[in-house]
Length: 136
View 1 (cartoon, rainbow, N blue to C red):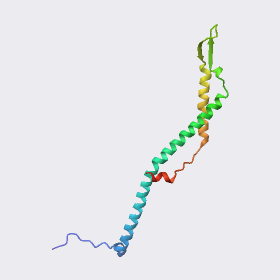
View 2: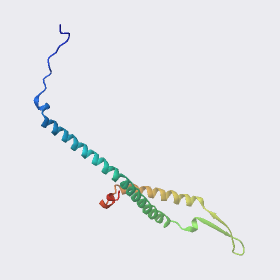
View 3: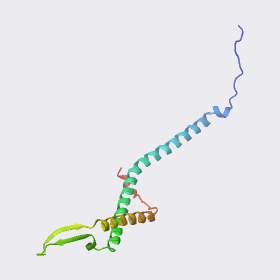
View 4: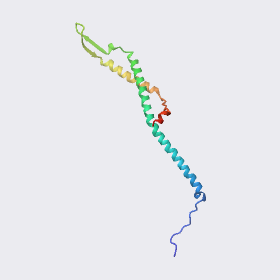
């Protein structure tokens, strides 16, 4: 019977076929997979804690800055320039009118100064206590 198709055998080096070498490669793959999976599990445990800590720190920082800047702006103004009190002949209050222009100036000054102070803050360090990781 004639040969229709034939080719020579591909030479495979003995070290690839070697069982010890296969075992080493398998162990390296298992080791790397274990490290990656452990890292993923650890990051999944840390991320919610880290997000909550960052939000709390940002809220705290924003509250402190807004209170300080509102106090600083209000020291430049008095309450008499914000409202006009009209009284009748007997001294009874008939109307309290708000002066919109000074109020709007105060609002814009506070917002601008808060934003400037937040921009000055830069990076803040957040620390995670190890005991928080064990609760998960």
